[in-house]
Image (cartoon, rainbow, N blue to C red; front, side, top):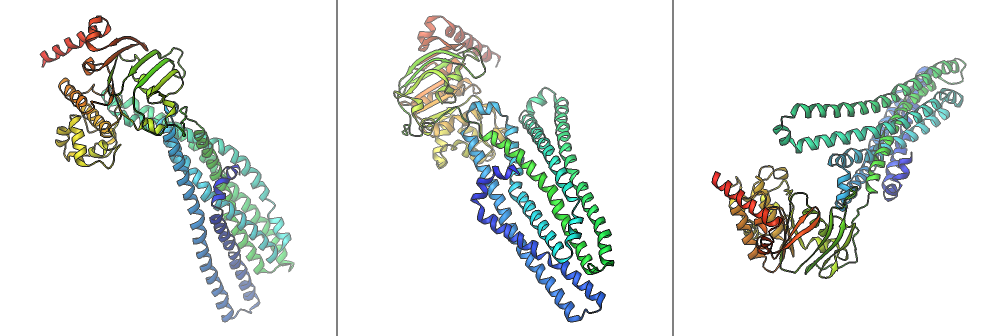
Amino acid sequence: MIIFKKLSWFFKEERKNYFLGVSALVLVALIQLIPPKIIGIVVDSVAAKTLTANKLVSWISLLVISGIVVYCLRFVWRKHIWGGAARLEKLMRKRLFHHFTQMDQVFYQKYRTGDLMAHATNDLNAIQNVAGAGILTFADAFISGVTTVIAMMLFVDPRLTLIALIPFPLLAILSSKLGNKMHEAFKDSQGAFSKLNDKTQESITGIKVIKTFGQETEDIEDFQKKIDFSIEKNNKVNNLDALFDPLITLVIGMSYIISIILGGYFVVENVISIGQLISFFNYIGMLVWPMFAIGRFFNVIQRGNASYDRVSDLMREESHIKENTKGIKEPASGDINYQLNSFTYNGDEKATLTDIHFDLAEGKTLGIVGKTGAGKTTILKLLMREYDDYEGTIKVNHHPIQEYTLDALLHSLGYVPQDHFLFSMTVRDNIRFGLPKATQEEVEKIASEAAVHEDILGFSNGYDTMVGERGVSLSGGQKQRISIARALLVQPELLILDDALSAVDAKTEELILTNLRESRENKTTIISTHRLSSVKHADEIIVVDEGRIIERGKHDELIALNGWYKKMFDYQQLENKIEGGVR
């Protein structure tokens, strides 16, 4: 029952609807007491040979009227109770999705996509059932059971009623014990479902890699193990749930036996009439649903309670990025002053970045180069406030970036990540994702700057071509250039290219960089790359190795140093010549 306390905030908001729904249930329970009573009266009239055609028509008419009224009242309670449950699901989904959008990188490193999907589907459905089926079964079972017992005592005999109900406390005791076990079992079941979701999502996303390495059989076997584990946990829930129905049948059967023996004795002794005994049996039959509803009720609330705990744990997670809601709301623009003493990823012992200091004047271009894993992307992540727990300061226009609201900071950035992501919609909509009202002319102009316009015209439906999930129908270079176009369209104050030209050839790379220099003459750009040709024309280049700046200067200055930059530049030039010769 604790789940109702946890959801009390919602029931307070929806108290009017639930009051109307439960009131309709009460009326239904009261009206349903009429038919067994009428049947008993008719039977007694037949036994006494006093039943007339007019009386029979009157009783039948009353039965029909009661049936119509019950039909209408059932519509009322369904509308208000199930409607309330639907609103709870809508509200919970909205809150959970909003929570997802507010979380930081640490959160998404902790929780896998499949697990989050399980929370957003199965768990929310189980919570919704508490507000729908849970309220229904609780109210209906309680109201129907109580009114039926009262009718048995008033219309038949109190002694017979009390004795017939002797087995029922056994049901309450065993149901409570089964309910506690079901709570734990269902929690394990939902956990197994989350793992199965993780596996499914991972396998589908990585299907190309699986096929390339010929690991289909092994992956299927691993998937089968996850299914078997999930089935094992679900079977435990189902086995516990299956114990409710036989238990209820046993209790009802014991009640029938007591009623037949004692009720028959009362009829012989003229304590009650044969019609009253038949009514009594009908009332016991009406207790079958409340008893079965109790079993269903424990199932629903235990599932809902376990799911609510899982979702609540998720909702209690807090982002490590704290927004200054009263901060600077104007778009962040101006000189960038990057003074980082140290940054270490959570769980790592060694610092990822150390002594990263540079100034980038507004309208200038900075190149960041270094080998894979040197810390280039981490420098950019800190600038975009993906992490805040570092020693030092990062300022834009002389203000620490924490003094800006997140909208003010992030809306002034155009970011093209190395793991480019496209949405499953048209090419046009992907390009204008950050500016949905952009015209076709604006889209085509920016696509030309990103050197992808001609490619798009060659697609089956041009700009209306659906790119598929994560841009699966496009090549790596096409996805990169569409991502660049998407970032350029919003005309950001600061454009960040994180190894965003790795999948294009040298000629296309040079064309894109030339277009960027022309279109962003007075705007700031940061290019992080391992291909030195991408930063030859940068106003300053920093070379990062093992989280430290080991060289800095312009292209010619770094060549003159004859250090890492010079060696890597010569190597890449030689590599390009060899590739050109092979072609």
